[in-house]
Image (cartoon, rainbow, N blue to C red; front, side):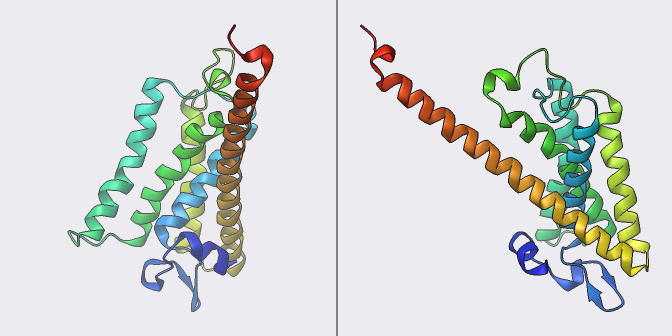
Length: 197
């Protein structure tokens, strides 16, 4: 698992959780991102509306964007050597991004008309739709950082892998939908019925 996760993470041992000499396959920040992704996808899937959602409104978008801001600020501050953030703080900044991204990506699996359809529930409807995944993610990261149980360490490794797979499937679905819509649009334009008189 560490080989394919390493494609998306620098895996620096000094910036990754350890347990009994074993290094977690992701750095703290990436662990937070992928745990957040897992929690958000699962929460949205079981939150009484399934994964067919419309894009969040402006207030929710601003709130979600604000949840991503700490990663941006902390990431650049660390890269510019302004300060060195402890691992658990890096993980928390990653959770904000991981919990927010599915709110924007899941609606894009549908056509644009459906992604803004008023009859669909919002991808960020209500406090618990945001607080639930954040709480689950924070609990998992707390276990990752402070637990000494190898089964928990391995379980969270699996959770991050599932989060990564869910993100990749979501992105592939968006690309596939876009290509199929483009092909349909081209066919409609080239067919005799689609040509202007």
